[in-house]
Length: 252
Image (cartoon, rainbow, N blue to C red; front, top):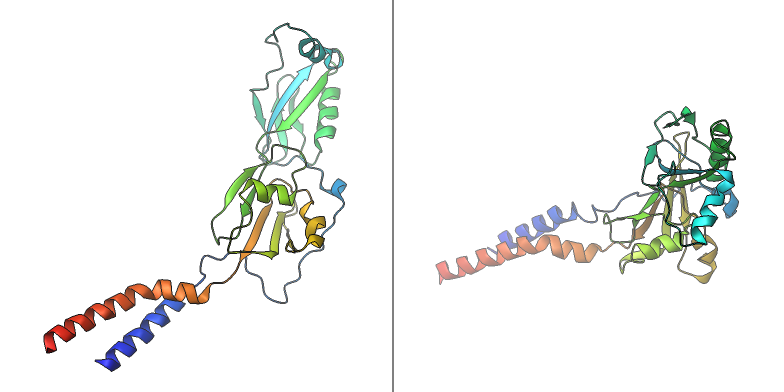
């Protein structure tokens, strides 16, 4: 009976070890070559990309109408500016717009796209003034609990790494602040992977780096091998205990 118990315990530990830390993501080898962080914030100005959803407003007379309605009690009329209407950038980078048809805006900054559309509408409206907002910008944040993540909308143009972490609830108890990975997809299809150490005050230079839409922030969890072994093996030990009790009652 003792031999059976020991064999069952060994088998339980073997089975449980196969599922330890299986919820960890984006693992890298010790010799993995991380990309070099560029802390120049101007380099990270957002570029319009395929699948972006754009809210576009067009005003005449260089937007003087906006000042009239913000400085007076006049109700805003229903005109050609309809911020509730959105336009989707297709896979080829084009967006279908009323009056001017398909326009290629992919790869442009917000300011460049606004100027581009103002020039495109100049033959239809007097001194057009354009406002563009990308309303589906977001990042994915995994804050240190393994595979549990949160989608964080980027409501402001220059949301930093630390702000995105704060919006997701901060680094979890299990998270390792010295190993924060930033995964960024590029238009060419190659992913850039950066590593940041936010455990010291020197890491503030990385924490203030702006994030881009589609970024993945992954806080590497601290492995909990003993805890997970006991957690996974607990049902087997309970089974063994139950069998031992039954055996003791039978042989009494």
